[in-house]
Amino acid sequence: MSREMDPLERYYGSMLGLAVGDAMGAAVEGLAPGMFPQVSSFCAGGINKIEAGEWTDDTSLAMCLAESLVAKNGFNAPDAMDRFRQWWRAGYWSSRETAFGIGQTTQAAIEYYEAEGAPFAGLSTETSSTNGSIMRLAPVPLYYAESPKEALEFSGESSRLTHATRLCIDACRLLGALIVGAVRGVEKEALLQPGYAPVRGVWLCQPLTGEIEEIARGSYWEKAPPAIRGRGDVVSSLEAALWAFASTDNYADGVLAAVNLGEDADTTAAVYGQLAGAYYGISGIPDTWREMIVYQKKIIRLAERLYTASRELAGKGD
Image (cartoon, rainbow, N blue to C red; front, side, top):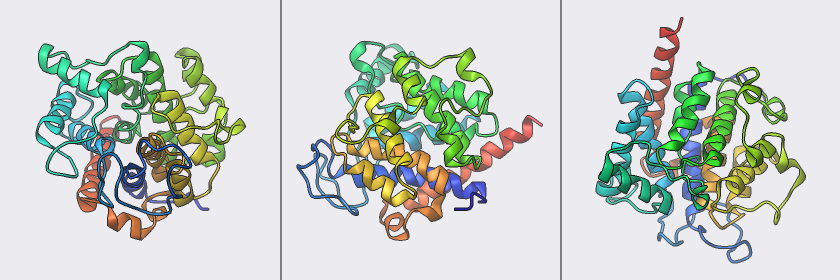
């Protein structure tokens, strides 16, 4: 497959790829493998009574973050938290009239922000190393794609809004690095080399923590389901998403592999979709799937605004 592609197509792909994965996985969220028929396209149901094409908190929070980056010309923690709060309290950027699907760690952070006004409200307890910050990450590395050092820094900072453990911060740094590489046209073989980063020596100067470093070294190459699981902890979630990306050669097969792991299927597939969408571009996502997505055109317009803002940022650095 040729890697020559208009970068805008990758921005569309990453943002819409996240939404497609989220929506497709939502119908089987919470179900263990074997408890549901193999998913091959969108379906309705699940714990949130999803309609086909609806997406959950993963996409909602990603869009909130994208809007914040564009509106504030960069990462702005208070503004991002204000938008997260607007989603939770008023349904801003929800696929329905009201918000739904919030995780406990994210809810606790929003409530702390409301009470204390501290935007970096993430928990740092052992049980809070969940996948709620990697699921929404894509807008940050997309915005800073031409400034990879900042992309990694702010990917980590974006986690601290709601998820402040070292595992969560480093998972965001690693996924941010991969999305930057993908959107800049790096081949999959190079992306998945042990320790890949778009900034030379960054993992030596600012090492990844144990289990995230193992993923960066390619732990997913040596595993397969049931050792690979789509659970809600950040380590399992990132490893499963990268397994789906590494073990397939197109967006559709990879997202179905992620979804059919079950458990926290919407988030596994959303994490996969951010990276795979950036790699394969919007044309790699089947037309029929794209057309099913609620507010598809609105997502595409926001992706275009994110792309334009990223080019303007790059121009300022010249």
